[in-house]
Amino acid sequence: MKCVPRAFLLTLLTFWHILSLSCHSQTYWSFSPSPGLFVSMFWIAYFLSPRFCHKFVGYLEEEAVKTYTHCIESLDKGELKMWENTKAPQIAVCYWRLPGDAMMRDVLLAIRADEGHHREVNHTLGSMRPSETNPFSWSMTSHHQYT
Ligand SMILES: [Fe+2]
Image (cartoon, rainbow, N blue to C red; front, side):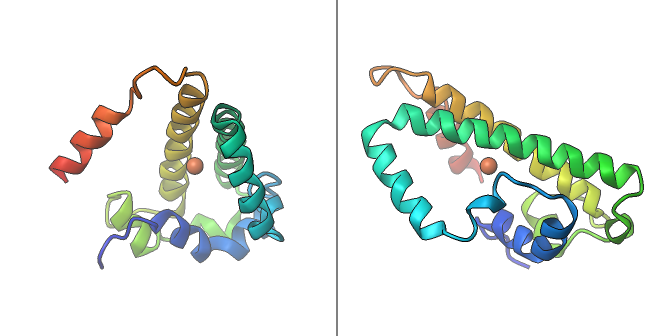
């Protein structure tokens, strides 16, 4: 299977119905009925204040970390029976470079780590002045050169 850049979203779509029934996340999913409206409003907000938008997304990412932590804790307590013996989908194994025998818990850990990094990036960008150099530009460039 070929890894695609949007594997995160495809993985979530794979688990969409389980996530929405099991974790009761009120952060990301609350936007689902009106994604077009949200994107439009966010675009306008970003035009007016990129710093505000990066901070806003940073706080959303924090909530996502809490949500995935809650899911992992629930899984460990045996409250998510349907995930206890669920193998990671191949797209998630490929994208996050998980071992071939990875389970759903491993996917949740990988997603939570991503969200934690997104939180860091967005809070950092939201705290910068326009004249400052993006501290992530070098790492992103070097990542793309060697992969
Ligand atoms: Fe994220």
